[in-house]
Length: 68
Image (cartoon, rainbow, N blue to C red; front, side, top):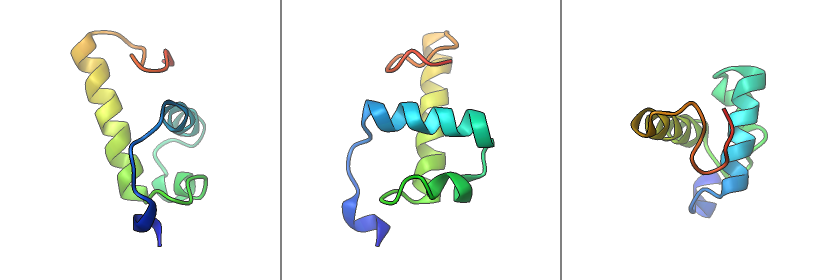
């Protein structure tokens, strides 16, 4: 069950998530196949938090990983 292994998102997961969104758009079910321990909704929520952080910092790059 995906919810058994919930934990903090790592920088590597953030980077991978951003790359998958660049490649597949926001097809969360497709992207969730690459994250066996994360649900589609947790990925969508994490992506929104990353975007909100970018808006607050006033930059087009992720402050954690440097990706656009």
